[in-house]
Amino acid sequence: MAPARLHTPAPRARTMIHPGPFNPVRIQSQHATHGRHIRLALAPGLSLYEGLVKPLAELGITSASMTILGGYAARLEYCVAPPDKSKRALIAYSTPIPLGETYIIFGNATLGFDAAGKPLVHCHAAMRTDTGAVQGGHIITEETIIGPWPIPVLVTSLEGFELRQTFDPEINISVLKPLREQMI
Amino acid sequence: MSQAVAESGAMGRVAYARIAPNEDLVQGVEKLCLAEGFRNAFVRGALGSLVDACLGLRDGGTQLIKGPAVEIVSLAGEVRSTEDGGLQAALTGVVADPQGHVYGGPFIAGGNPICMTFEVTLEEWLPED
Image (cartoon, rainbow over all chains, first blue to last red; front, top):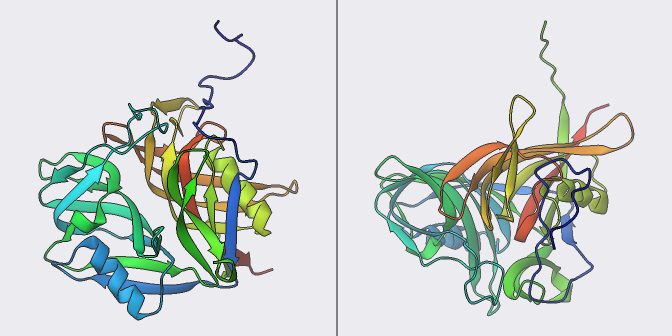
């Protein structure tokens, strides 16, 4: 049966049903008393993952929010997020789409830990492909190689709490969540 | 006549949040400020996905980008306290549809439900009196 059309301005935002139980806590947040900022220059030839994780680990930074300010990748892989045909979750990442030399226009990335305690980088970016088309999506940082010039990154270190990949029963996949360090 | 207005201040605390599915992007950021006690803030980083994206146009209309999911690939913006005792987020950004095609504009409050997750880092802004 079609829903009644009430006085809701179009377009009406959709509410989607996820596979797992609804969690009444909708915002999970932590804060640090101040921000610590670092400028990184990502080293040519490294993967985006290594270029971000290694220099920050040397500074003792394991959880951070990062802005990739633009630069060339020698190659890049990314995914888009269509509906999950298996229905295990609402959406699932597509198979990786490989691109050759690519200009990363702008990106945001989060550094945390995966479920096994290894550094995890979650990165979304807009990029110009070698055909000139502009695309966007989820960047596979391990398969993206920094091009011939260093890429500048502004890092905001998250201190006093950690980001950890945690299984979320509501959406049936794991996502990064902030946890106080003494709770881990 | 336009007049430039400069506001001096300092950065304060830094908050990171994971906002859950079906919450609105813009109002979710406002509620994060309520949760953390921020009255003014800048977005320092954000990524995640939307069910659909709703971007504002100059004529007051909207542009709907159909998902799910529409990936947020860039986001900038601020939260400001308002004279009526509230606070208001103004967020702008670039999104990618399920084919990877990109669109950009201001996010309309109430029109951008989160699909899977939204991660955001805010830095508190403390204006000088």
